[in-house]
Figure 1 (tube, rainbow, N blue to C red):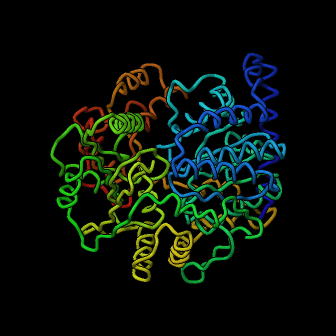
Figure 2: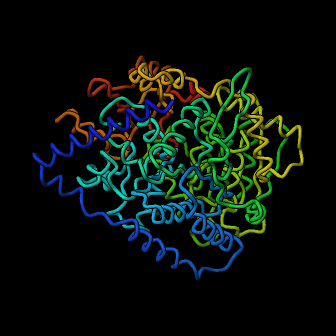
Length: 571
């Protein structure tokens, strides 16, 4: 099971050495830009100074527990390298605590760099900004598809090629698809994972259909290449031991003896960080009823399971500048600007109304704080993440998260398995403490029993026989995100001028990255209907542009085809 990872690691060393030697001979200027990063020891000094700035903060219960988690992370960073779990309820300061552990672990064990992998692009730049504040922008590189143009320069571009920087912020897609790739450009960075520390933020977001090959990769990199992994989440999935799936399916996981927990159950963090009451509404509600409930609050967040439902509820609200919509029908730049405005209004002194209807893109890691949250029924992990946007800083005695069911909603795909597992748990324990780690474990056990496969693309089978590993087929099949949709460039902000430049001078890496700030993904059915209706321009083969500005709403994003939204396109 390990040989294909070993072969890719050797390939990575060969490819990167070849590129670097060629660059040194032909482009000395670029070669010199790869030097002069701070050492891990220097980064620890910067981190200690950053943490020290907050030591005099108001000694609230939340701040005391955050400090205790950081202290535990520093203390247990001395443990032997391997696989670690950091389970902290939302609002417990996981991001900084995980970095405290990683930097100290790297210092004590001579690790070369720290790589933070994040599942959602909606939070990756938020995390990267915190890291730049701590370690300096010169020591932090981002490697993902929606980097803002101001963060790209020649030095960061070079470092992203082989992850030759002390702090790398990337996505789960970039990390794991590189581990199973057969392409030189993707495999080139793999040797940088050896003798490094990898933080998997929001580990519960790893797709269950790929959990077995991902677990095997983590085990191999830990055992063979000296990599330490930290799985960081508020709702830790069952990654260790053997678990029964649907029918004969089994999840072997990672050996339980190889996983070290950083926080103790005795710390009782879920009780100490309790700031929210979770209430279940047993009736099915219509969009109009949900809209009326939202309008009954001055500050409220409503999270639903699909883009279509978000659009429908938002459209039922009385028109107001205090209402916000967030979904992937909006392009990345629009989402960032909208989040920034929401935060500004929430932080504004006074009692200004802020009402937000959103999909799950705000659920994990997005730093928002509302006194009331409404959440459509989903898996327990999603419900707890939503509750983490409620009374996040503990400024109220208790916030309230209302869980509701939508009339006529029929879940599909993996979210169906999550909802059914949650409904079963609710029937078994209607008065459970939903924040209790033991209840979360029981939820995952029920969820796994409903999971039809932990290796949907048979990656393990294709890689199990040495000498017969099907590298090209594995690379083609291993896609953490289903890419059956189509990507469109929308007419928002200065997207039109970029399209004009594309027509005039043709594509380039920099231009295509800039255009990535203005993209929205739609289903193939939506795409075909829009193309037949004449809504799409094709300025370059394979690049589709929604030129009509009337088809992109400044509040809710792409309007065309909303009536055709499929529930399988959830965010």
